Length: 464
Image 1 (tube, rainbow, N blue to C red):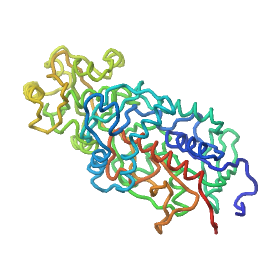
Image 2 (image 1 turned 60 degrees about the vertical axis):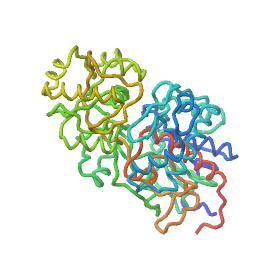
Image 3 (image 1 turned 90 degrees about the horizontal axis):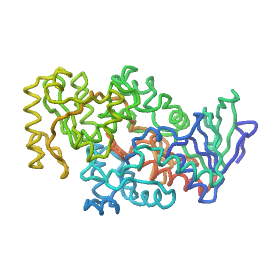
Image 4 (image 1 turned 45 degrees about the vertical axis):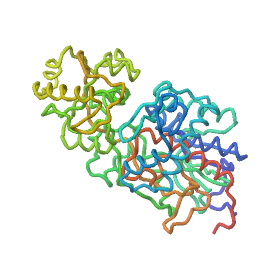
């Protein structure tokens, strides 16, 4: 292979990983363990990508944690849930791989990386059973930090402040921009490149091309520089893309919080153990454990923030600290229902009837209005009440470059682009029209590992 695109090479390794979120770091570790030399390129000054923004829920099926609590689950059931949430638009073969390998992901995390989880899995909207395994600190950092430690232990080189600017004649030739030195540099991969640059949730100009509602007035749960350039550079050299129009909005965000950490944790309680009411009618208007798309679309259709309500009993069951929430003045406490109704201009009588009806459903463990699956440990809501305003923000982009089961990027003719792999949110097709909660970290780990290993073992025949 004639390295002719650039005049000289500043960095060379067997495998070059672009992006240092969970997908990129998992790819780097697996490539190194497969015998390759590896370099990771990160555009930011620190590693972790959007993975460090995660609230720490990982969807895993058929685990010992579930069995400990009598939760019957299987990869087949998780797979069915993924297809249902994705409106059967998923690439079924890829979704199946994520579900099938979810349990082995848990083993890799706990035994190889010593990642710590809380014992009891919980349920997220769209899942048939509790299969969300919560990281001990409710944060993706609980995976990112052990991965970074493993990267350091294995001697993998990470270069920060390096932005991908273009691919060369061969995808293994990369031009990057060094922000510290303010100059272009050339990087060469002997066997393969793994693209793990994330989604485009923070890229307002690009996302409004696919959903005109998502202007700069719509908030974003991602880091602000979560942009499309990595994916676009792959598309320029012939990578096909899929589902760019499917952009997921969070159904748990608050307009009163910029980063949504408190909002996310509070709604871990509200959705299973509380209620969400319409800001004008005071009535429930969707199943709080429906999938994300249904919930977010329902709230957006109202045109103004809805109100989520929980009590201390539900908070205790879900294991969160109410004192911390109140101290930030995002969640508010009310001594009775009248006080809550007055604060949010809700019709009191309608709200009271809604709450009384819901409490009967909890007693009977059957929601006759919206078919929400009532948790077995749920109890009727009672004063004091805790509430927060609820308004969707851009959260996840289902679309991206097309890949196959080997994590190879596919061109517009349906053929693999030799030497180019991708994993994580930069890819599309796995989740269809809507992603199940907790499945992003699962996907990043499953396909990050696949991409890294296959990039290390890539064999070239001829490159034109």
